[in-house]
Image 1 (tube, rainbow, N blue to C red):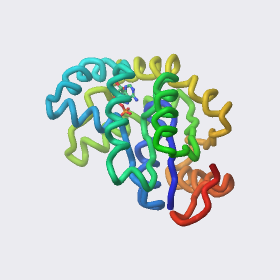
Image 2: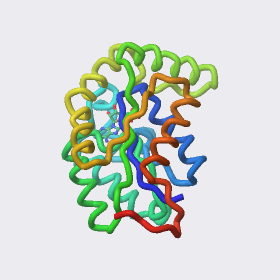
Image 3: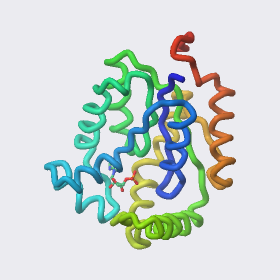
Image 4: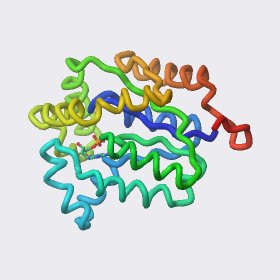
Length: 208
Ligand code: AMP
């Protein structure tokens, strides 16, 4: 399949989980700026040094830094057959930069999937993630703490939520109820994509 998608939603909405499932189902790659930044922090690169404290406090890393990371990543060969952006864009300037980047490559964005969830459920979901990661013996994220979560939510509300309107005005937005069980959310994402005619064979006719 050949798709360029964005997953949009607050922390704990299930973007990462659903992105992985889409990767398996459609055979496209997942590009998570959060994962890339965590790798940069772990490796102690200049980007990582810049991002570390901001991430730990629940703020957003400056637009130019994440735009640079995504721009480099989209240059790589595996991105040309489609991708799912998970956690990018997170601000209107990032969305505008992405539009320019895609345009310069003659790439079209197919859809933005918004995972809509009740805010009251998010803390519990992040607590579940912490418990699951601990059980698997994985290192828990430095920002998966209740006090940081409220800051991450505030960042989402102030800077990321406006993207819902941005993409709705561009007729790209598909909203899915993210409160359902994980399998049901996956099924619904596939259903709304199918309904809007997005999944395309690599050799099929594109709709741009
Ligand atoms: P995530 O794994 O997507 O929840 O991202 C973890 C953290 O990385 C966020 O709370 C931000 O500090 C930072 N981050 C990830 N993606 C972006 C982005 N597109 N813009 C700014 N900061 C980001």
